[in-house]
Image (cartoon, rainbow, N blue to C red):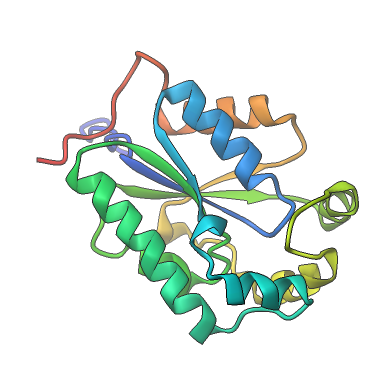
Amino acid sequence: MSSGQKPAPPPAILVVMGVSGSGKSTVAARLAAHLGWAFVDGDSFHSPAHVAKMRAGHPLDDDDRAPWLAAIGAWIDLHLQAREPGIVVCSALRRVYRDALVRGRDAVRIVYLDGDRALIERRLAQRQGHFMPAALLDTQFAILEPPEPEENAVTVGIDDDPAAIAATIAAELGLGQGVQQPRDLA
């Protein structure tokens, strides 16, 4: 950024992305609580049939993901129209999925939780009660397309505890409770 440019205004909606087990839900919930923003886990938009498919160890295909991404996009649009900042968790592993959530929505920003595969495997082995089996991690890494520079995503490592990761994200985006509010969407 040149000295004459203003920094970009903070986003109004964050999409926290990464593979299963990267800590998306935990980190995003902490960040939302810290900022006082709305929070939703994108998993809640999966149909029962798609949850059953994943629970059975079968990855979703693009046809399965299309209505899920549309539902997340509708949540984003609802919050943008209401001028209510929010954070949504969505694996968004491929560029085309992120484009579906960001394109035409200037106030939306991607946050990528990037981590070592061995660490993520250990986390998945300890996780209980989630429909996404650890066996599908291979398929997630196989389709993962980390954000490119032109996507203007914030990439944060997952080695720290969730509170520290959330604080890093807030700092990277210039967000803080009572410090700076998201851009005016008028």
